[in-house]
Length: 244
Image 1 (tube, rainbow, N blue to C red):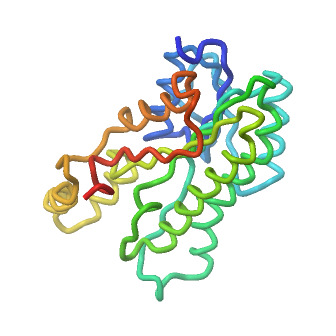
Image 2 (cartoon, helix red, strand yellow):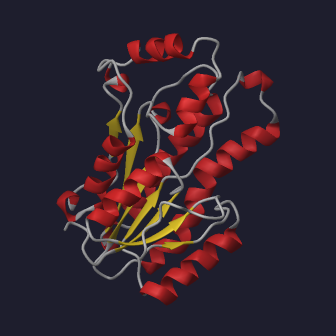
């Protein structure tokens, strides 16, 4: 088992990619500390610890780190999977929405890294940030989200350099459109959901959306010892979207 006896924190664990990552990690033998906004998590395993809360609140993040220290002593892997997407024209976006996008995708990641890096053992550890293809390319109506995910990439790269001597690796998985409950709900809001989905798939060289499990496979690789010489990297898992 690639993560046998390791302790891992997974944020945004309530559904979609976070749920798939948790399932992969559980299968590989990791002890899981999970967090999300839902008050209860039906998909948590019997040995998982789930702590709901808001990662934009530094007091909560500090308390989560303290709980991890008390229960596990150290944390070997941190998967930053949480985030918020608000779409719309740049000139029509409310300042409060812009703040929420930047806080939820970038500044909350900074808070988790700040409080959990000191918990990593002397042998080192791994942060895996779940970014987006839109952190690498621009897209109309997604300007602030792209800016936040682009900032997340640079946060990871800077931290990878700063923490290299401690053998703490920091990498980014950049998913393309993925079949999650959030994406499926957004499709259903369209006048013709099936036509809109076909339109989006046609923009992807592989002509289909990713599954959460495919994204989780990449996260598992970057979290595991098999990627021990990889840090500061961005791994697109987007069906060729950013290559086109």
